Length: 370
Image (cartoon, rainbow, N blue to C red; front, side, top):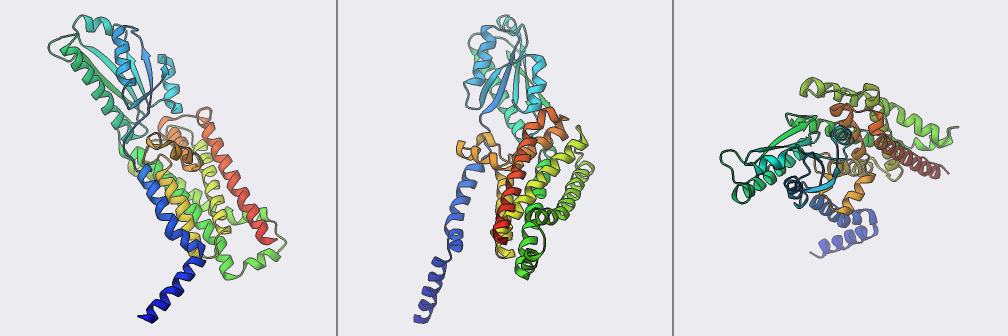
């Protein structure tokens, strides 16, 4: 027993001295708890709602109040019919409540009033939930009308006519496949680049590279280019296979899609190079690369869990996740058929991310070579 205790004391001292191992044992579990506890949330809240009120009566205002006063919808503002498509394409609204002219008159006369709800279907899970919210709210208001102010017989006073845009059948594949493309592309780009640089450290060939008449920019470019080409071919292959197997549509521009994938991969490769500068072994590089690519892309990009339902501090964190912007661009091009005038802010964010991580990787490599 004394020998076992002696070995235990020695191992404890080594753990305390090795701050990296200690941080993994203490900090990472807490980080996972925070991320999974707050990000893994299927509830849909703060749905951006626009209203096209063509009636402008007390009854139409009651309908709008039923949505605004709930815990599910945030009113963006009033819109006209010709503004709806632009708002949907940009993702500024997730649902539009359309109240036809004559709604109040029909209710006062004891007739059924149809109400239309337009829903952005690029996220099938969220669209299904939003449709359920809208139907529940309008059915509840219809019951209130029937029992109190507008008693009618037969059909309910208010009927719901949902219209799902971009994904009328609410197929999960059209929602999941773009996210899988982002997930696979980021994971392979980061891990492959990180391991390639660290491999040279382990083999001792990095010293030869330092002695060669080679600048940091040339080394970074040469190291990234093969993996960029392989990742680009792989990503485009995934898109083509998804179109073949899952009937993924292509409603936008192929050149714009290729440009978006290229920018996303450039950021992933830069992140992999940055990981390699802080890693001394392939095992450590793999763990860090998987952590910085797997977790954010899966949890904080809007791939599976809606960002609007996360706490504010976690929503702010998602702004540094490139997959957040790439998914908006990818779904916009593939499902909505939008062009550069719509997706340029997210494309610019991908450019900024790629520039920052590639710059940081180059600076750190230059310091190592100094």
